[in-house]
Each structure stands twice: as C-alpha cells, then as structure tokens.
Amino acid sequence: MNAKTLSTLAVAAAVALGAAIWINWANAPVSEESAKDKPLLPGLSDALNKVDAFGLSGAAGKPLVTLKRSGDGWQVAERSNYPADLGKLREYLYKLADAKVLDSKTANPKRYADLGVEDPIDPNAKSLLVTLGGLKEAPRLILGLYNGQGGGGTFVRREGEAQSLLASGNLLAEKDPAAWIRHDLLDVDAAKIKTVELTGLDGKILRVYKDQAGDSNFKIADVPKGREPASDFVANSLGTGLSNLRADDVAATKDAPAPDKVYKAHYFGFDGLIVDVTAWEADGKSRAQFAASVDAAQLDAGIAAAQARDKAVYETVVAAAKLKVVEAKGDDAAIAKAEADVPKSASIADPAKDRADRIAAVNKAAEDLNKKLQGWTYTVPPYIFSNFHRNLDELLKPLESKSTPAKPTAPILPAKPASRQ
Image 1 (cartoon, one colour):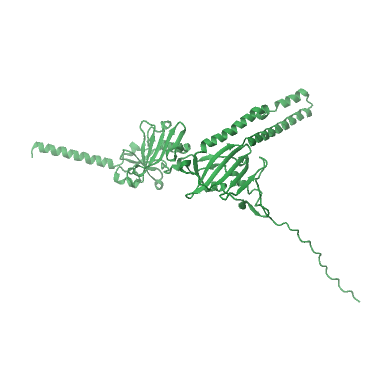
Image 2 (tube, rainbow, N blue to C red; image 1 turned 90 degrees about the vertical axis):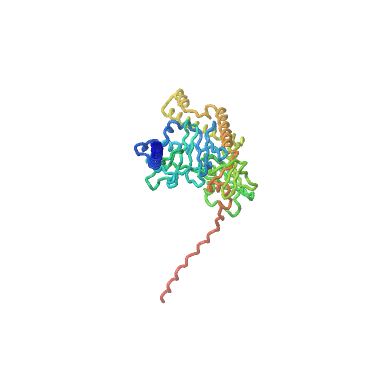
C-alpha cells in the first residue's frame, strides 16, 4: 500500500469520524448550562410593540389563524378582517416573551413526534407553527405537547434547529379563528329600556313595557282574558336582552344573510335609543344581526324628564339650605349665599347646552353601534338567543278564581237534658 493510498484512507476515516461525532452531537441534548433559564425567544420581550402579525398554521402548513395589525387595530383574516380580541393576543404574546427554557430534549427527528414537535409541513403533523411579523428576525416556533403530567411546560422547537426544548408555561394556542375575535358586542342596562317587542315566526307580538324609568318591573301588554302574569317580575328578563351581549363567532353579512322567516326583537330606550335585532337558527347555531337608530320624539321627552328631575332635586336642596340659614337667624345675604353655594348640574346651569349635549351623546351612541355591528352576522350563545323569541304563554298563568267563600253555618248546639218529674 503506497503513501497516496494511506493518505486517502486517512482522510476518509477522518470524514467518517467527523460525521459520526456530528450525528451523535445532533441527537444528544445540549448541556443544561448552555440552555436552561434562558429566554425561549431572545429579544422578543423588548420588541413586542413592533409585532404587527401573528400566524398559526397546522399540518401541511395550512393556515389556521392569521391576525394582522392595521390603522384600525388588529383583525382576524379568517373572519373577513373582523376586529380581534386584543387582550387575548396580548396575553399570548407576553407568554411567548416570558417563556424560559426549562430543559433540553431530543434532537433526533425520529423522536420529534413523541413530543409533538415534528415539522408542521408534514400532512400528518400534530404540531403547530407560530410566526410573528414586524420584527427584524421574525420568530418561527414549533409548538408540541403540553407537559401536564411532567410538572408543566410545553415541548417546543425553534424552526430550523434540531434541538427540541421544554419551555415554561402553557404555550398552546387556540386553533379556531372564532376564539380570537372580539367577543363583546353591546351592553345596555335593562333600567334604560322602556319597551321590548318580540315578533315570532308566526307574526305574533309579545310586548312588555315600563311607564317610568324608575319602575321596578316590566308590565305585559295585551294580556288575554282569563290569564294573568305568572309573577310580578316574570317579564323582567326580556329587558336584559341587550345586557352584556357577547358573540361566539362572526361572519360577514354577505356570507351569512338572514332567511325570509326570522325572529325580531325591538328594544326602545327611555333616552330614544332603539336597537333592532334580527335572529334565526341555521346549521344548529343561533344567529343575530343588529341595527341601531334614534327616536327623536322619545329623545326629547327623555331629556325633558331628566331635566325636570334634576330641577326638582336642585330646588329641594336649595330649600333645605335656606331653611337651615333661617333657623340659624341668618339675614337675607346669608340666605342668598346658601342658595349660591348649592352646586348646579349641567342641566341647571345651562339647560339648552345640556339638551344639545344629550342629543349628541345618544346620536353618537347609535352611530358607534352601527359602525361596530352592522355588516356582520353573529353566532350567539343559546341563552342570549332565547331572549329574542319568547312568547306570551311563557309569561302567563290562568287567572286565579275569586269565587265568594261559603257562609259559615250556625253551630249545632247539644240538646238540653230532659227535666226530672
């Protein structure tokens, strides 16, 4: 064997040895000292305000959730760019930024599936890929299983790296775009509602109302003969139909139009604000659309009533202040000062401006509601949907009989004993 052959064999052996060392290194976890307690995504904590996109994709690289930031805030692309739940997104980004490496796991691709960190491009992958946009070095993180039985933490792998890791916290992300939408719709206190009218699929109308804003209970209109309300407060639940209203999901109206037959709910406020609801069921889900408007006559009447209440309260307070001075033997100047010291509300200080401000506020409320709600069909929880299709029979009971009680009969006295002869 000549020198040239020996040299060639030596080079080949060195290459083979180097390859073996690399494979062994790749399959072995990195040392705890080099990874433990370090940030999972270095630099993210200082750059959170620069993030302008969030993506979540699954098997075969299929996009699941896409959130993007624009001048109007964050939107969910899979829901026709409906506004996103900013609080939910912020909470998840903070989890990523705060996550630390707890331990190093396998670097062997054959073992990835055990931890759920296989390449998401695989059609059978159970992993998820999280991507963030707007950063100089955009993180791409493969999410695996939550280590719930092993003390917590989530198995992850930074895309492009062989090493898998156990990171602190539960980093699993919702795969349903509906979970990322803004869920709150509107919240109108029942105390502000004057009238509720529900129209069923058969066209029958159920109407409940209050005479005054301060009334405790709603009354039922058009109670048929022989029936009466099941209780004094049975109709009150109808007034809460717009309280803390939330949606489970959303679609553009053009993609989920209302059918011909629908339930209708009409909410008429003491302040003149009107909210109309169109509701129906489709595919086992409860759907609803909303529109707001203003009744000018009721708005005027509501303002007049509110200003009258304010005036009555002011005059009562002034009278009490004057009486106190009179009882203390104060002079006219002291009485005048007592009246001047009573604070004046806006409706007392400048009734015209107060009226204009109230009108503007109600009109803006209607405008804001339409800007937020119109053009969308919402999927609402069943308990909310039930408020839009009640019927009269549910609220009534048979009229209790008021027959005259029978007159008591005279007691039968015991017979007198026979007298002795």
